[in-house]
Image 1 (cartoon, rainbow, N blue to C red):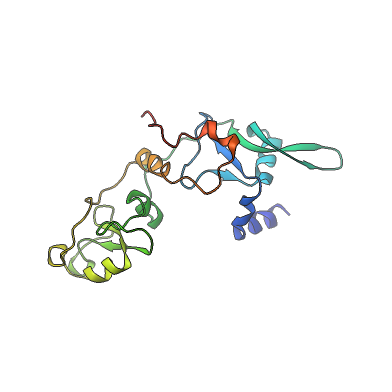
Image 2: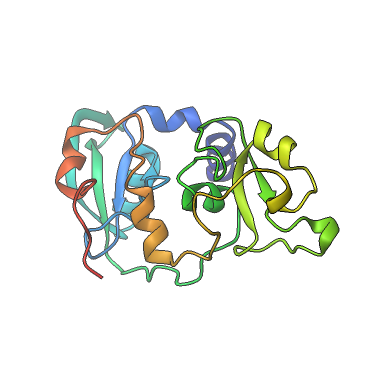
Amino acid sequence: MNAEFRTEFVRDPGALRRNPALVLNADYRPLSYYPLSLWSWQEAIKAAWLDRVDIVAEYDEVVRSPSTEIRIPSVVVLKDYVKPQKRVAFTRFNLFLRDEFRCQYCGSRGDLTFDHVVPRASGGVTSWQNVVAACSPCNLRKGSKPLHRTGLSLRRPPRQPGAEELRNMGRKFPPNHLHESWMDFLYWDAELEA
């Protein structure tokens, strides 16, 4: 039954729309800002029942079993500290996050893909230092030509971001739903100390 729930939850991310729980590390910081570390209310209750988290805030709603009534957690904190990763995986999502979801040629948002600054046909490699977010029109305009022959210029040179830098970048993109009980734990506008 637990495996079925997990599979159904993965297939239906809409399950997070109803009473999700903000998950904080043992230092009371979210595990991630973008995407925001959230669990379904079922996962939060299960973790609390297994004594893996402390509940620090709750919704007004309750769930009942024949013998128990539990208020649904809205914020949980892990009892064991999870060390943040130092290495940043080279993924399309992390690339877009590094580039703030903007084309690095024209600055537009939306319809993003990625572009090799030094084209692969010219020996360019797929790496942090050679790939940027690009909108489809700029990507088509550049094609497999060298940058200096296209009339395009980069807003910022591509580089590998640090893990903390990428986490802080995620703070600029809060999700559509922020429950009021989460606000004390989310510092969207404050600089985090290193």
